[in-house]
Image (tube, rainbow, N blue to C red; front, top):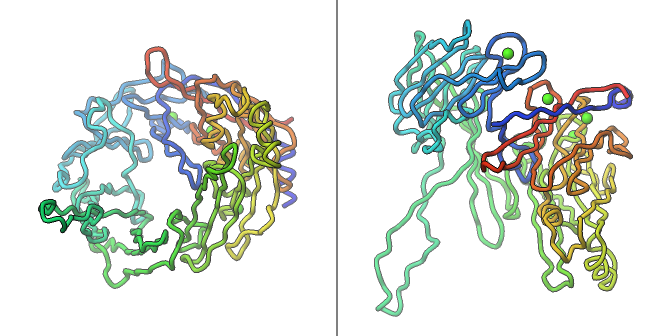
Length: 490
Ligand SMILES: [Ca+2]
Ligand SMILES: [Ca+2]
Ligand SMILES: [Ca+2]
Ligand SMILES: [Ca+2]
């Protein structure tokens, strides 16, 4: 505990901006706040510095910087194509082939070109209109021998291709999907007789699949009516001696208890089989001006009991984040000052006040996988909405959409997640965190244009989160500026 305090007091943070087009990320996961990288990181030239693969190009890092003249085109591969990276080697999956390339002596050298039998049955490379290889993760080292296997979702299961005698070949088809069900969403009319008609019967299936080493988990959501759901989980174990086929003796199926319909499966800590968590926003339409209540719910131990916190707020991305870096996700709740007080006070605030008080509460998860009822620590912020709420400014709308606050980054790599707040339309304020909570005052501030968006991701893979600011240029192409974090002694 003391070591953490010292670390946080010793290291501040500074940010160095660099324009790197092509750095794109997905929208944040509402539950965890995490974004998915839509680019790849690998050390192509084995100089110990992480290089980047963006659409169509590789960007080499030199002395900690990604210079524009250190970009090279990727090998010419017919599109559509998915590219993934493994230990400095690039793998290009087209409709029916897997091609492997390495950067050597300043040129791309082809190491392999294998036909993927049966691959036409697996899903086609996405984004068919993309002319460039699309960065996408499909390589997994299932048996941990250092050589990756390629895993693609198909119509009837996961297709596994493994290296055999130096070539990639079909190894297993994993039937891990639940069976299809008849879609009864559109019932047919029996009466009056004139409206009777034959309707085509649709079938559907939906599930989440996770691949972790030799373990594959599929989770199916079952609606049981009355706003409740159940989750059925199947855990499969792959047998490397049988070409990664499923070992039927080791399959384990479980079903959760009844849960609120807004929860999703989530791993609360490393030893956790599966927990469930979610948020729901209830708008109080009758109140003047309108307000809402945020319900944050979590259920550990396979959905046995549900713990719920209600606060006056809207949804903010990242309700479950490991704030203190102990491997257990912590619960974050929000309270907006927009709704407090009586009707008259609220109305005056709504019509004339440009600043709003926003509260963030962190409930650290304890060893029993529950959360203290009172927050472990809180942080109060003043957010400048630009204009009174009644005008619904661009910045105010971003506030209601939960887009001004992010607690997923660790900018000084001390294990504690730090807070980023867009507290003015043109400013990001960064508060470092420590056992006593988020810092009293901002450790750094970054300029952001009114039409620009920000996301938190570690772009150069050095363990310190970076800030990606993205915008559409006059040419309507996406552009990005990265603020690389670096530890600094204050
Ligand atoms: Ca490199
Ligand atoms: Ca934690
Ligand atoms: Ca930190
Ligand atoms: Ca970084």
